[in-house]
Image (tube, rainbow, N blue to C red; front, side, top):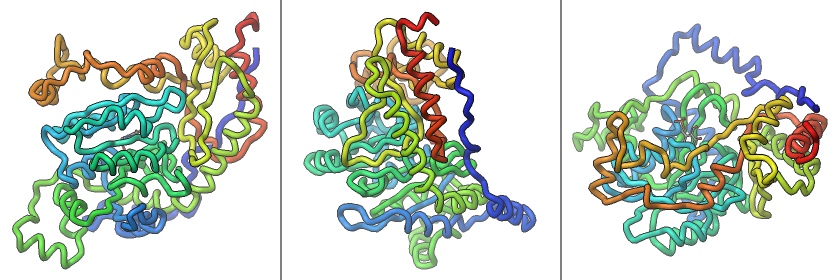
Length: 409
Ligand SMILES: Cc1ncc(COP(=O)(O)O)c(C=O)c1O
């Protein structure tokens, strides 16, 4: 039996200058900073670009990706009872952020191969009740942002991006986060842009940003003019939602950002090697990359299409060969127990009241491609941030052997 012996390079890479900067923060006892992270936000503003309407990015570094999602929605006036269309095939925080602000998640199906929402599935699922669409650039793959922007414009709904897994990915050359009315990124320590914990929001609309700041920006993080104006209006109070950011994480991120594109290029080169060695294997595939896309492969998702093994057997056969892999989204969000309002017997869930009032019963809904993908894929971390053709050839050989029906092993 083949065995995969290679180790990915350490991730995230922390260079000596980064360790020195963190050590200096400790020596300076700079444990917290009410001003926030304006230098990091300036770096992020330079990294991102104007959106298709020519609006410059307004970044805000806050406590987590989930907080960033809540912030962009609240900033745009999404709140109790409002409907937000998103994907049932995502990390749960995309959806729990909608629930946390009292809004109602509605779902559109995905493309089976990529696992992503598409312009077509969104157009088919949008109802007049939806105020916004929240796309997720899952596994580091960019959604079709030109097509989705067009659909959102036609339906006059806001477009938000959850780019928590896709820092640096692009569509038609434009970075994710630079297409929507606002975007949210997680920067927890395993993401393509990794701090310790934290996340950032990108606003395009100054008014929306100010609305969100009131929920979580310390007045010392505001420029003088804004602080004075909001103070005179009696709006600078302590009704905040605990989104203060971490000074140490901001420093880690400032040091990581200059290397992001280069690390993504290595991930992409490694995926190209892997694709080449996997060839046209009929049982297992990596979703093709559309010409307009520039994916960054935060996670590798392999779609299992054989019928000689179950997906569970394939998963185990990979593990036996030393290929770490896991079932990242085993259940689509609309099928999760805590999303069910009828017959639910677990501990109380605060969003059930909202869902019942709106007459939402997810048990009656079906998203066939999302459901099938949850049954059919395996995932692995893909922090191969240095090109390693030999490792990818070996990885492909192990995957092919695990997929083989007649290897006798
Ligand atoms: C797609 C997606 N959305 C949101 C989040 C939430 O980010 P955080 O864990 O920083 O709150 C994550 C984090 O794992 C994620 O992968």
